[in-house]
Length: 264
Image (cartoon, rainbow, N blue to C red; front, top):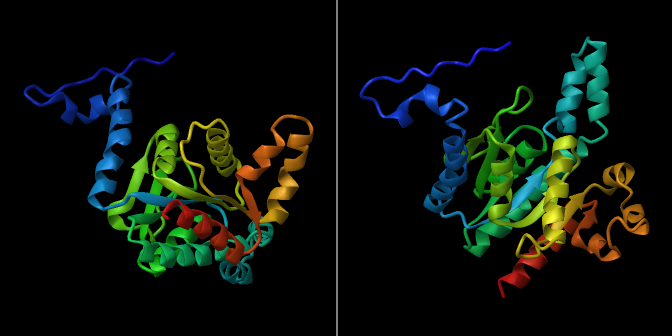
């Protein structure tokens, strides 16, 4: 049996300045409203109007880092983990390269573009790193988790946001998104990708935007896209909501061509 925590308010002090109140159950609506409204002010101040969003695993490491760690690794369990990660290491480097290429393109548009990720390590770090390399605004929407997630060092200080609630964080992923790239990932990446595809499919998201699913040899093993259509679970037309790409150049061309058409 748990006992309810008693709130202690400081006499004469504004209730909204009381940390115990804000962190309590009754303070939840205020926390939600803060996460919903606060980023809007920050993005407006920084001139951010459009984003290109990268999704992908927090666990992915570049091959150079995996080789470095394996060289000095004496723990068999850790060595096995690193060898498994080597199967997808190429995607870190691809995300880094694509982030830089899209960043250079965005810099020429003068349309308030930024590259946005979930703010953590892995693919998120790679995307932010690419944008940071070329001076493009680099946003990280971090989430409070019991493991894995910590802000990567390539996010602009003023655009390093911390969230408590997944659903508000997802709202901000979509709010200014003009393109999406989904790199290999696990449950979190699948969740984000399918929610966004559902919003586009059901026309809840107003603008049709380019969606690139990067890494056919990964995604085609874990999702049988054609079978979804063959069994009537989705329409054949729904397979046109996204593009599966295996090269940085193809992903870049699909995204920039689509975005440039919308700006004509």
